[in-house]
Structures are given as structure tokens and as C-alpha cells.
Length: 387
Image (tube, rainbow, N blue to C red; front, side, top):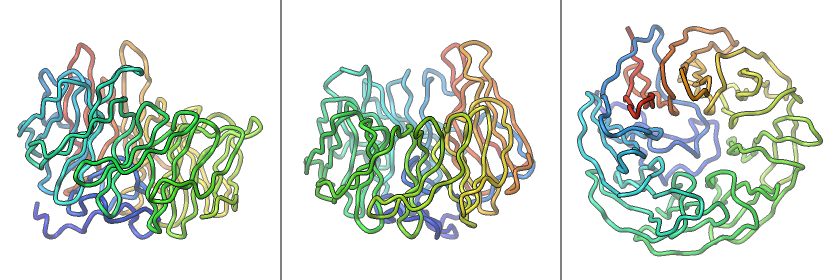
């Protein structure tokens, strides 16, 4: 794989309104949040399953990110480590933190940001800045546990939610810039927009828009916001799933927080953040066990039943194939599925796995990577490639 031939990573792919410059744009996939879920790579047409690395002693693994060399990075809760694995499945290095870590993010020049987490009221937690070889550059004492992966702005500042109710802004050398405190816990990691705003959902039923200095610009309110990360289109419109007056729907807000569009009300529950595809349609996972496509104007285009509960937002590959990860979420005989669907909702293929699959990444050469947490304290790093 010649990375010089790869198109740079973009969280927007021409359709989103996220800040472009905070993450490592040379990386294959540097973040699990703050992107429109539109990949620049193709998924396989006829997938072959391969466990490329049996993660001995490194079970209970997080979702992954992939750097510019193709190395796959993830946290192991059982191993209390951040792990780097080559595309061939060799463990390249481990950063032993001595505590549970969240999914990392990759900033400019390959700098890795990862924070510790644990029991709800536990203390002594840290945000680590690491080199691309796992060496410590600096440590910031965040004290309270980290809840979501770090987010990085165009100036290299790092934003992280701790203990549910605090949003911390930390500068590129590890110094605290400011703290925004909410009355209720935050429901998601912050989002940085391309026009210099911070968006974040809180449990007081408010979507906040903050300045880059942590001052409130506006907030909007609904009866109940769901635990869904907002998504932003190129015009700055914000899409989010919400429950309002016992009805479940996707609603769009403009840059000033005014409601400007409402998508068809559905029965059941919205499980995932929406994904935007290049034609402007939205895909969202919903109960009972459905993937739903909404047209640009707000009507339901189609819905397809999926095996198991959809655990992560859908991902759309470069030609419009929709990828969904789901699980039966049982404590015994746990099964997970990766399902590929056409843009009109027909199932192309489905792969079944024993265990709990994490959020996948679409990579070059028609490959999909993810960790799979099996029973008995075992995990594997999997690829789905062309057979």
C-alpha cells in the first residue's frame, strides 16, 4: 500500500461541516467521532474473514483508529494498555498505562491522544499525549474519568469530557485552557465545526453551541434528546435523533439553533447517530432491528431489518454501500454481524461472528478492520477483505 497515493482523510468528504485540520489527515482513519460516516475507501464485494492477530492477554478491546503507516491502534481494558498492531497482525508496541483507556485519537504529525477511564467516581485519571511509537510526550491530570475519545481542533487543542459534566480544553503542550461545566452529564464527545464552534449534547435536554473559548452562544431544547452524536452538513445544519412528546424522529437545526427541518416520525427507538451519504440521504439504526434511510426532504425512503441490535452508526463506503454492525447483546452465545447493504436497502452480504464486534474502519485495498471481543477473556483483531 503506497500511502502517497491515498486521498487525505477528511471528516467531511465534501458533505460535512466538521473542522478539517485537527486530526492527522495523512492517517487512514484517525478518529471514531466528528465525521460524517462517509468513507473514502471501498468495502469488499465478497468478503473473507481473517483473524490477523490473536490478542493474547489483551482482551476487552476498544474500537480502532489507523495511522498513516497502516498501524491499527486500540485500547485493551484487560491489558490496561494502548496497543499498536501492524496490518500483518504483529504487535508493534504497547503503552502500559496501568488503568483502563478509551479509544485513542490521532492528531497532527501522528501524535496519539488517549485518556484513562474507570468506575464512575474514580479519581486520578490522565490524558496522555504519545508519539507515534508510543513514547510519552506529556501527561495532563484530568482527575475525573474520561467518558469519550479526545477531539482535536485546528490549532491542536484537545477537548475531552470528564465525569460526565465537565468539558476540558487542553492546549497542544498539555496545559488547561478552560473548563465548561454543565448541570447534567454530557451525552457525547464535543464536535468542532468548520466555522469555529463547539457543539455538545447534555442531559438537561439541551444542545449547546459554545465559542472556542468555552462561552455559551446558544442552546436549544427538546423534551428528550437521545444519546446520539449530532452530525453536521456542509451548510452547518445539525442533525440529531430525538424523542419528543413520545414520538421519535430526526430533527435538523440551523447554525443559530433554530429548528429548520423535521424528518418523518418513526415507531420504536433511534439507536445510532445518523450517517450522511453523498446524495444527502440520512441512514440511522433504529428499533426493532432496522436500518432506516431518510430522503433529503424528510420522508422515509426505505427500511431494512437487520440481525440483532445496531450498535454503532452506519458507515457508507465510497460507492454508497452501507455497512452496519449489530449484535444479539446476550451474555452467553453472543453473536455479531457485519452487514453490507446497497443504497436502496438490499442486503449484499452478511458476515457472522461469535463475540462482540467494535466499530469498524474501512481501509485501503477493500478491507474492513475491527476488534472482536470473545468470551473467556479473548479478543481478536479481524479483517474482512476481498476473497
